[in-house]
Image (cartoon, rainbow, N blue to C red; front, side, top):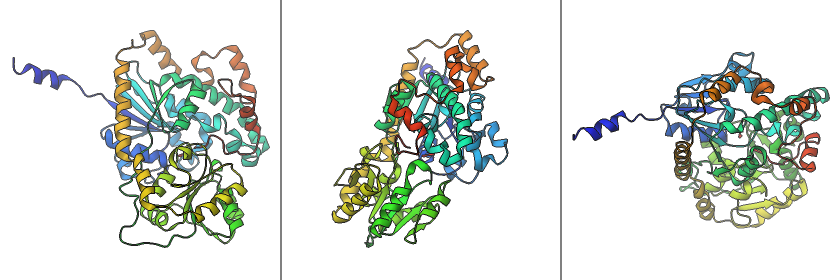
Length: 447
């Protein structure tokens, strides 16, 4: 009799876990979140659309990485974004039938993986797909890809947006990386979410205890993509005659280098140690675009470096105006230049900045994320699994192109040839932004 509890415990099987991430091509904010989740589930295989080996951390590389057919397409490791219309089919072909818990970290397509009926799917959402919703112009407007290609891409992105919305039901529980993203999830997917801020390595990012560096010049650490609006930072620093150092690479690099003057230095991607040293030396770190969360401002504050950021998106949740930095009222060169003048005139307490950053530590993320997973798992046990017929229908959709999936009605199918329409009754102002030049609304990386 005494052996029965031990036997029962041994027979309880741990859930089989799969991790899913959009792509593994560099270590940006999303990959830093994934790295911590990999720590929590060290034996879980990692599914991804594309894997450029050697471009992510050893901790991520140490997992069994399984890629999609996109990996085998020409030049996919560098130009994977060109295959965006194929991502829905690639995601739906992932075979996750062996797993009980699926955890996706997504800003693009992988939140729409098809899980078995018994499994729980928790999606850590960095943002609903920006380019398919409200930022089409920033990524695929005439200025970015040419007028002809932009026109061709409009119906493609419209179909992708419909697929993105329709497949949101495949997620049991959304976890948002900020209140700002939680609002976007509510707007585009009509779903509620739990907010768990991303983990910042506050043990690594800290002021230099042994030396005091004179702080001078401004710093931007960012992927060089349109919505980051680094052109505003460059123009504002030029107006003040202040040096600017930019760390990062991306498709905007050539345009930004042509715009920049001799006081702007482009360093490409650097090691974490080098970036930490720049945080310690800079007068302020700049964030001119709208971020979904933005780990860079928190890393900077953890090192005692104030932040000048647009007072929208995630920065409004991570920067305290006048105490840990300056929040700029609008995305203009004039307003940002005023913010730079203001941050230079203020005196900041390094330890106060660091104390604020500790609220976004790795430990808080782990506690919050594990609680969200446990809650989703507990709620799932109270619901009835889909019937065999429903499972068969889901499996059948794996072989369908996204425009045939989910039984879109004739009215929706007819709209495929029209320009993208915002979901969930987006107002006319949001719809109008699709055809305008890039605006820093609802920005991310990200990725």
